[in-house]
Length: 227
Image 1 (cartoon, helix red, strand yellow):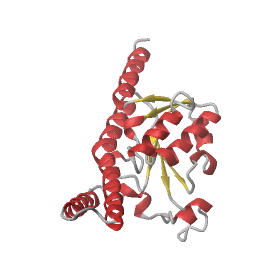
Image 2: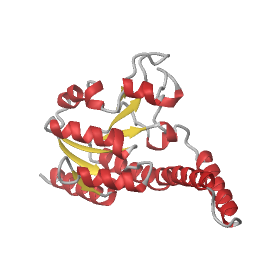
Image 3: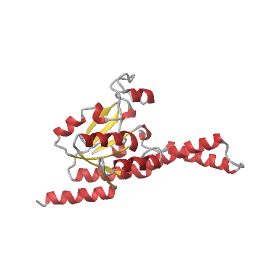
Image 4: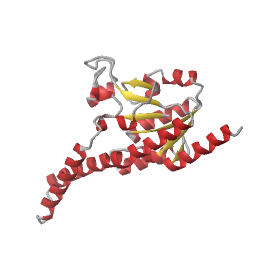
């Protein structure tokens, strides 16, 4: 399995989410007191509420589902592999052009690239660092997966329509059989998330919920143990 994590949940608390929810309420209250929202008010409200919704999905849905899925995988002896964004250098000069333009930089050895404790690696589980959206294009992950004898990938994480989608496309092109777990993923808007899921479904991967994937893992594990 691969799990993409970004800066939004580097800290294992949701102070930013609480602040965004409060800001959303304040803006909504201001708008209700006027004849109609100004363009500036409407834009501010939309931006804050969108970010709050994004973080809420990560905190309320994705993390819990990822924990359950990882537990089921470990119980069945399935390898859990993480990918994180981390530069090879402290100033990020080795980053991809996209990450330089986007200002996406986590220095080598810094706290920003660590997987949060709630869904973090256990024991000697593999963590692969990358400096581009495409983990297959910018790391030795394919070499590692081939060495592990892995043919089937369960891919999930954040952000659905960026790193996750790129990983799914590239994995499928390289001959891996891919399953995406929809409710372990999140994008900045529900619309972008849904569009990406539908674009991948049935073309580059199968699509499953956490419950469906855990049930499948449980059945396969029981079959193997019964041989």
